[in-house]
Length: 215
Image 1 (cartoon, helix red, strand yellow):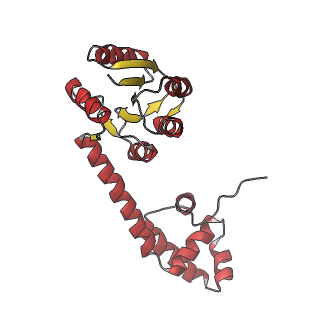
Image 2 (cartoon, rainbow, N blue to C red):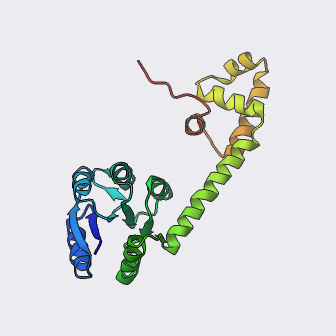
Image 3 (tube, rainbow, N blue to C red):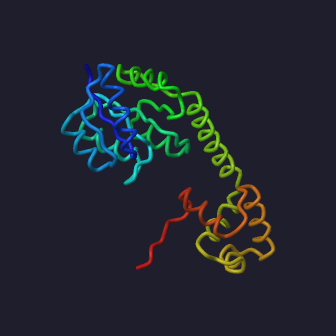
């Protein structure tokens, strides 16, 4: 029988899963509600499978997966969560999760996911697959928006993000203020941003400008 470990922020969930899985020939090596405690116990117990919530009281499941995999590369991970935030799911997959099952599914589906991942497969519910498709589509849309900018619009974007006014940008690029304003309006329309804060956030998120920290 393979061993497993359960991590969930709610003790009752941990206890119910442990009791149910123990009655189905799984050896439950332990349970925990927090990442730090869980990692120590998992590394010591060396379970074959870890069933975990994606969002925990002291951090994200992706962090636990990364740290455990560094010590136990053969350990398998199944996310059991109702959090459908695309970026969180993506982070867990990139960290090394082998499956994701929602807490809202019938228990039989959860057991199927446990069995499949425990035996070396992967399991992702239909709704999660749709969420991941949405994340991928959004990334492609952002890339298309970025590629649609002209070189001059990209220059204006970066200079705005660095805190320059239209007048200062005009001086640096040897353009008229009106021309700068035209480039600015076109860039904002293409990226669907509506103020300087949004422009700056976009530039930082896409690494078009460096983040500067106060001394």
